[in-house]
Image (cartoon, rainbow, N blue to C red):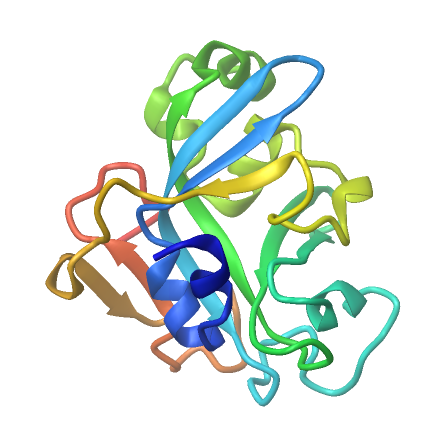
Length: 190
């Protein structure tokens, strides 16, 4: 599957299909790469979705062309990022929850102030910090900017994907919209 085919998927299928793809950021400091091992889907009719009620200045990137980056702050101090899914003007996105670091590990260790490779990108705020993803990357697109996606050598088989409920939310917590690669030690939480 190429990038255009990936981004043409509906948001739930995109969430699963992103597993195994590599997230890459080429920055002034160097290159960061990690394999996507955990995702969560947020659909427009979902009460946990930032676009549940309406389009706002905060969530406008979710309504962008497929592949638009949505960066936002949580708990007043951490940042997360999503990749928009579905058609333009439909507010849906996939939260990238965890990565398996592959390139730029020493830079990530410095950013995260840890020597634990397992702890570098095993959560949405951790991977944003490790990669140096910033608010000014909001509205970037994985097709045209320095934060991009690289296809896997082989797709992850359906029976190697675990489907479960999302973490850290109160509304829509019962929806099975979280996906991760079974047995991967870099996921945020079982």
